[in-house]
Image (cartoon, rainbow, N blue to C red; front, side, top):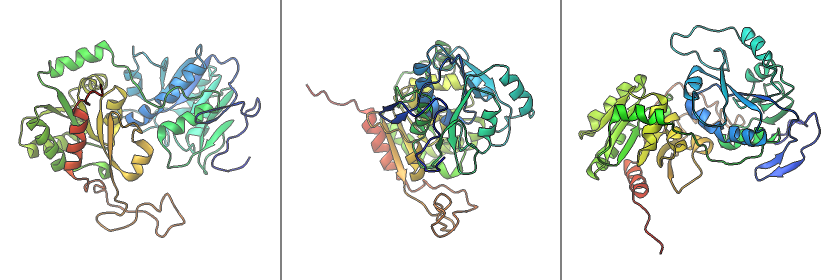
Length: 388
């Protein structure tokens, strides 16, 4: 088997039989009743895989699609329409998922033994490069396995080379195409339920003005736009007549508080007040969501809200929406650490000078001017003029 980045291991049933708009489509697996899909990481990561799940549903309409995920996946997907029929919570483990608060480590061997009893026909790894996840997926005992493979990962039955810089949505659509599931959409979409809306309304009440949400947090501090910049945007939008929410998780309370204090105008902080479904409903009701490149930004887009996202340029390549009717990703072009000046790209391009390692975690997006975000926001908030 060649290690060419664009190659995939031939199907046990033969060579690819067709071509889709996104490239070759492999032969569909026969007699599939149950499909396992490993995707057990964070919110934004899961949003990116939704089009691939939709492709699997279209290609295998009678099969049960079982997401191997985290506890929050199970909670989110309870009574929610979409391409996932059931969630199996995988135990925490290296390269699989991080343990949640107060979560006891599970035994992967016990999980895999129980999963083999499910008799999966097809197991799909859309979780990452595969060093840890490919052995895990192989351990499910499915008739056919498919997924990604980095250089340090063992192969699956059908695999695609993991290349870092590729839009995440397209990456996973290419994976499911290996098993005969061509893309039906490139736009992630998540349904908002009546229960989500009821929960959001109980917390936020009825809106008397159009709402805009700001989300200033991000797990990686290098992706955080300064609180003062979010505050400047909040002042402009409040002056324009909008009700401004500032959303955050409990661990982001300090960041939200900093935005509220710096804004100096009435805004509504929402820290841990909304469950994930209710947050989706709140965003769906917003005229606009402005956020760092983090899960809530991608959630907002998936439920239909227009967005302005602040991205480091590398993440822009992998995660920004390609659509411009409703979305405006704004790029920061910083590639050297603002503290020590180390070029942080050679880790991905090892033949370039330096190793790309830097211990600092300061913002790489701080130089995005607030005026650019305000202009993009006002453009999306202004209804287009009629062409009649």
